[in-house]
Image (cartoon, rainbow, N blue to C red; front, top):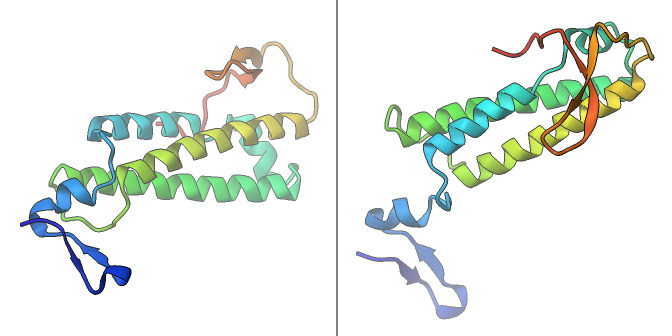
Length: 159
């Protein structure tokens, strides 16, 4: 059994047969479940803010647009983390497929969210009052090579 086209040639629709559905419709381009879970863990590590920055946001000291961006980014991150968990369970056979989201789409979302968290952190650091004492902060080089202040207090969102 193979893929077939139905209708006239100008309006052809490709129909996937069951025996080729896994190889044709997955859109995973070689992304293994382990790679996806590793990327999920990386996003989980990148997501969230140090306590003092979180306090700056939750006390409404941060500008409203940054608070809104943080809240939206936090919700979107949780949604993607949940989607990766569901996708992983589906791929490994623990549950039947619930969503048509591919590994490629999830990896793209993870990379985008990691970048957005980095950008939000930079903007929050610029918005925060200059009250960084050397005993609470250290200059840290990020994976992309950028330098920024990092708090020595752990993030409330990290496991």
